[in-house]
Length: 117
Length: 113
Image 1 (cartoon, chains in turn red, blue):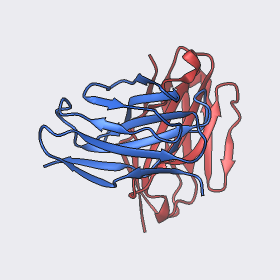
Image 2 (cartoon, helix red, strand yellow):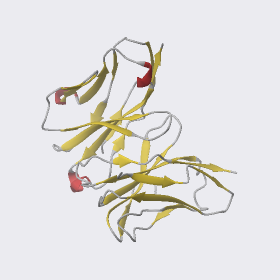
Image 3 (cartoon, each protein chain N blue to C red):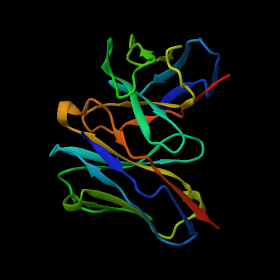
Image 4 (cartoon, chains in turn green, yellow):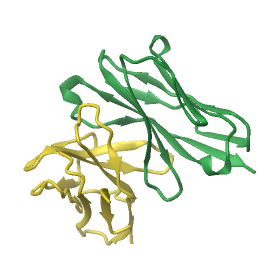
């Protein structure tokens, strides 16, 4: 069965520091998708990135970057020069292609990121 | 603007009462999902639907029911059989369940009186 582990329950850093959120996943599928979502205090989940299992290229979007390593089943998320507005709960999620991916996403428990001014 | 609308934002349930959470989307998405979020926990799948008039149980369907009579709407009923209903409920939709990018609504907080 699929599983997503976010071992860091809470991280607190001072503004402008870099911070990495870890995500480790388990799946038997060879085709799958990995996601990161941000949940601000308002509660809505905001999509950040989707990566398919055949694309191991790292991605950078402004201050955000993602490191996907199939060899270690990890999909880590780094925020460079963190800002107070980055404070939120961040979720890593997995979607398997088995059964057409019909059964939605499997989420980790989330990492609460606190950026102190 | 296209999106997902959940209502109400806050809902209170009395013991023994059924309550219904609304989820409407105007994105023309085929797939819709209901998730439950408990404090400090990830989201867990309750029900999902890929097409109109069809839906499947997720990991924690007991005590819940859904319907999908229209493509745009996927209401969730929390029945009296759900003994611990207090949670944050999120609805999502996706144009393609096979790796599509699920878009989430703003959620409904359900509490028991």
